[in-house]
Length: 447
Ligand code: PEP
Ligand code: CO
Image (cartoon, rainbow, N blue to C red; front, side, top):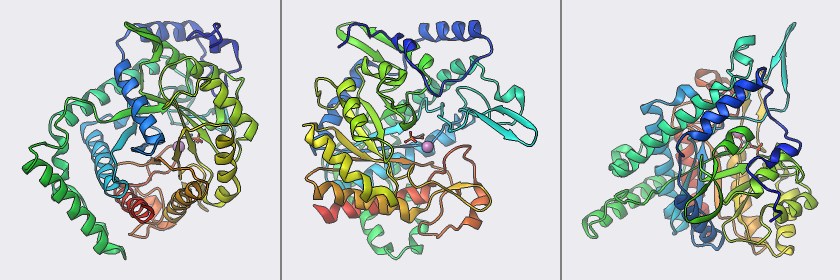
């Protein structure tokens, strides 16, 4: 590696999507405080995830990466955290039935608080203010006080990430696996689906398999000292990320200890930019969002800079083409990577290429397009001798109405009922479980 790398060497490169703080000294002191706090995750967990992702790239595991587009500080409540874990664990159980291999669970949580925005400023009538960039930076209300970036939010976000992870770890360890009992699967919606019978069969199959494990093998699901979920967020706010980037005893290199799996967003993936500079020097496995706007040359540069040694598990390419652009771009991305002799893990994000605005200006996504992009991605990979090894979904455990479609047939006029997201629209609990059933069915049919 170029010896000039340090956790702060990104400061010498152009950094997009960074907030502009009115008081640089206040920012500095918040970052100094952050640097002194204990880490959220450990290097051995990070290395374990890298090994599991290497397995997934080799076809031995399947990855479910999911969670909010943007966590909000107000979501740090026991009920919301519990429901988020529940939807993630239930989806992963459903996916196991289709993949017939272990599922690696990665939450977009415990720090997914910073958002890239297409505009730095937002204008309403005569007033122009900085855009909302996520709770780590400012607040969504359209007032000068709320929109001014506040460095204290970096600390509040870090603390909430810590509280979230602390509770999740306790739930996973303390028998939250009870959620596999049939009464914990909310399958009310299933009767609206033409596949109702098949879904009930899958759910019954899961219950039976878990009971077999418990009664015959004496193993309780979730009854393990090894963590069985990992955390991820977009590595966007480079001050925050680098303040948590450290050396650890007995292992070479630097680790970002604020998440197991940071990813590079599509808006900050310039090979000569600050985000790539930062990510190239850390030992964590990293995700790279790729899509129609990613040129072949850019993709090859990213592979060379971020993974010069072709280390198994190091890179996951998360493609987000959109159903309409899939045929035009996914084959090109896969072929480019293969010709370079690379074997990263491929993950499909069927959300970010399928965002549209309703006539009333709400951002939404349609369930059928999400399903379509996912199912065709499996086919395109296999037709090119490649393999789709995971999915990346924006969802919530709540009963929101942000995406249209699904078994209940949510329409645009239903969206106003429970639209919460300040940024991208998420699948609700029912839509998420339904999508898991559909992905499982797709995987089963391709075995
Ligand atoms: C996101 O994952 O929320 C996001 C902004 O994605 P992308 O960088 O792919 O647009
Ligand atoms: Co998003």
